[in-house]
Length: 119
Image 1 (cartoon, rainbow, N blue to C red):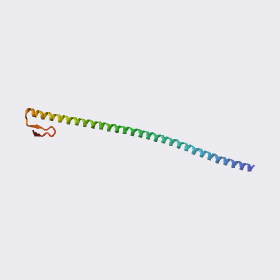
Image 2 (image 1 turned 180 degrees about the horizontal axis):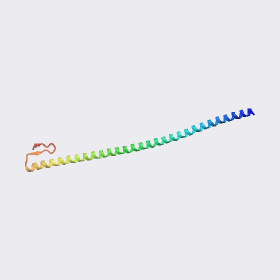
Image 3 (image 1 turned 180 degrees about the vertical axis):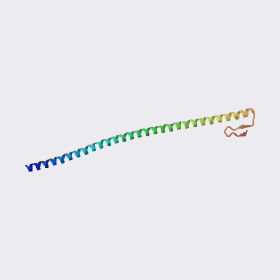
Image 4 (image 1 turned 45 degrees about the horizontal axis):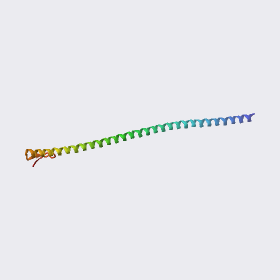
């Protein structure tokens, strides 16, 4: 009878040790699962941040390209206006020279330099 009790106590002790080990492993598994969920959440946040950064950079690049195109258009417009102004100045200079010959004046102001020259 005593032997049976000792065997039963040993069995119960072994069973309790196995239960503690199982509980410990379950606890570690639950912690690992929580950690995995936390990591997955962090990965999702990082992916969202990268997507947002990519989108922001794409928008900035488009704005930069648009600004460069606008500057190029403005530069072409200014150059065209400059050419037109130079042609107009030249035409007016010729017209002034003709008017000088018609009226008989000997001095005509140069349209480009603003200086008076002898004809």
